[in-house]
Image (cartoon, rainbow, N blue to C red; front, top):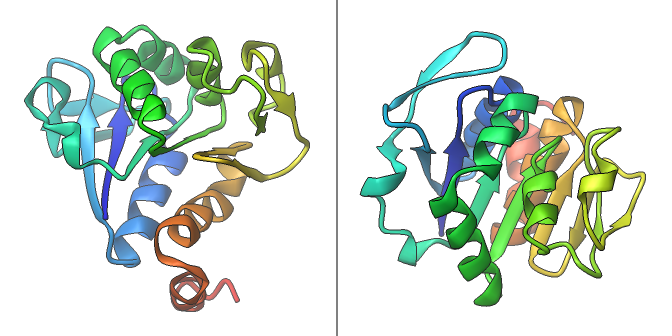
Length: 181
């Protein structure tokens, strides 16, 4: 299974790094993708990471899951990247899986991808989830889209992604290794 996680300047570090870590622990093939001109991307709390690839260099045809971490300015930067917006719309049209946490569901909402779906997001971002039924839950799965509430629920979010791609037995295995269960 192939996962692409997108990094924009201002991304929420816990959501990005925690999700990458848990998905890789489960054995998933995760590629981090910078939507900037550089591989170096600076997080919301001035933690810089080096992405695996730049957006323009990636062939996304093998993608099973696209993941958007939140962060206020990170989400704004994700939402203005035309290539990413086109990719998300194509991915959704093909019925493929995508996930967003914290403020990042606003990107999906702005593209109309949450229309008629249940979703959650960081408190105060609800109005941007156009057409969604807002749920007061840590993580919400509706069809091909998974949304998470915020940084404190990164483990729940990432383990839901593992469940979606690999099943509950793998979730139990990874959670036990993390001493979560």
